[in-house]
Length: 390
Image (cartoon, rainbow, N blue to C red; front, side, top):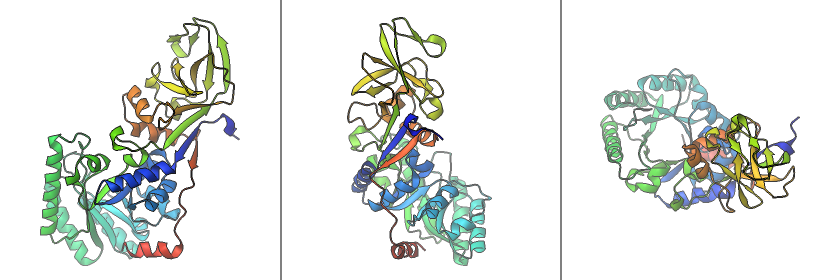
């Protein structure tokens, strides 16, 4: 058995997630779809889903069916959209669980219709248009045929087109001309869908950056992911929800000119004290931040000494009388001077999304949820919410 006293902890503040959800909701007249893919960016999908639904989100978004069905299996009954699946997927379990499906191709459309027949229930689908990223979604020249076929299946009763969706690739740069091009492409996609006889209830193009920067892209529904967890410009007023700590496992006093870590790339320039932490790049800390990163020890920033190892890092704590077992704050919201996920991302020349999702996948980091997530609604209310999505 693992000794939890020797394991790092990732503490998730649901008060912050709730406040972020409310703030984002206040910035738009559209409804919120809270994106809890990738285990809620490493924060815990089930717990996060319950929090965001209790604080303003009306729908949930995930990538895979496995993610959607995990939520359903845990008692989450809000509408869920899954938007990244293979075209030959058996969609019948999702249709049976009343999970909405993104449809970016005629192959996906056929699979959704087949899943509906197998489940003896109409499949709720969102037609997905590529508005300029050359990524997921139907290409513009494929869109008219996809809409025509979807309308025919809707008339036959196997599918119900409840949404049109797209994604802007440059929304974090409001003046980028690709944003207008994407908005125009999405508007044209809507006209083509109407000409085919479709009348979807929802149109969603904006994610967190577009919600904050581009009101013209909001339509009636926005998908918010990163912002729920505090990933946004500081001016947005959002708060990071994750705090990562690790306990000191050993301490040693060393003289000046002591080489530390692999390749001896870092050397002490004075007599000092070194503390060892049981966390490394296997747990999601970017090795590229070696020689740049610092952590918070007893309220003071302290340098990470030497190259990161797979399982451990060394901290130069100066003359602090630190002892084994004492916690060190590796990252957090920044309230006490600790580095934030944005700081770490800057050191690694990446984005906070990558850092947080990597930390969230480590089985050696214990995840703790602060302030208990909102419990599932009573069964009567769950049934009502499902009935309202059919």
